[in-house]
Length: 276
Image (cartoon, rainbow, N blue to C red; front, side, top):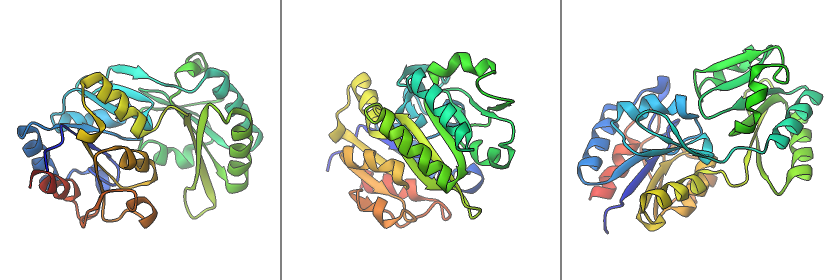
């Protein structure tokens, strides 16, 4: 089997373990892949400022896929190369609806996150996407409002009923322009809804990267662990699910790894299989 030309790695739960740690064997394996002529990049839900330190630590070059495919950014300096943000009208409607259903709104731009006062309890969770989080009395009356046309991903956090009602309303009003996912956040009945443009997922982000760099989908291998990795599992020529991946996620990958995010070494295991 020929080597892939591009290897795309998810971050949280894949390359990054507890404490954002990269296992030494994974770091070394990335170097081996690069020396073998494979371009190694990132495909993550994090925004640019949350992904850039890892890209730099691993010596990556070229575009990386961030914000779940909504943004291509340079892995050296973080400069945005292309963006597919939510329509400003969707952001306006969504922010109003979140307020009506007592959800805490967060806007993810390519370089920073904006939220509102009162959301400190979930700020630590949100900062996993980027440490650059600013909280305002309201988003509508903040300087961030002028950048609402740049929102790559919007997230609302609250009780399950409010999340589900807002998600249903949004899908009915903007079903042709957005993708909406809802999921439990913790044991306190807090849920989150994630909204992005319909043209934005990791597969579409990687497709834009390949068009830019001259790769084919069949020449791409990917490694991930969660539901937002399923589109790129289905799209890439070869795909690896981490050992801790839920069965409903892993079934979409061509191979399942034995290593987990806790043990470390999943990326090294995948690269070992690729290099033979």
